[in-house]
Length: 225
Image (spheres, rainbow, N blue to C red):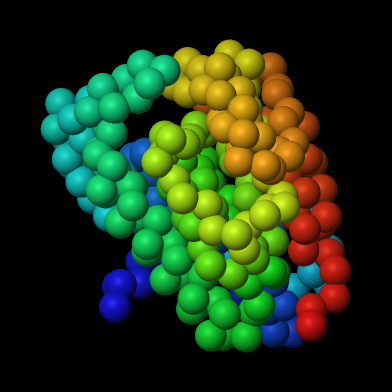
């Protein structure tokens, strides 16, 4: 059994959760990183979303001189074809699966569970979402890339998975061409991702927050079964 990741959890303001968003942070951050973003989205309380913001384990990161920090996987070298620890990424994806399983056990159906992730967190979510054996509500890919594009084995349950890729045109950490490559790979496997860019770096901006809120309402606004 996969150990559950520790996480910040934000419960709905009204009633029990009818939907869940699992939101993974980037390298060197933790689950608190996007905690202030949740109220800034100004989502209707009627959506009854539980936000789960897990903390990555601490690992030595090669490109940061082996410094130990929160990381979903080790990065061995930068570059458009980033070198990374493949097994650690798969392990992190399995731990996301375990969090999805727990949400289902808590009464939220898989098709009302959405994965959001920034940078490294988004990279893990591409793998986790595409390989999960039950249909999910969607994937929100923020300033990220798709490192397992050539190795992932998508599950048929994810045919038609909604994906929204949001990226900064001046991102110095994950250049926008890496996001465009992710879109092409997703299209290659039969998906139709949305793609939006913003004049910003490796961050979020106010306009993007509106687009995030709209995507969450689109994917999670329907009635639960």
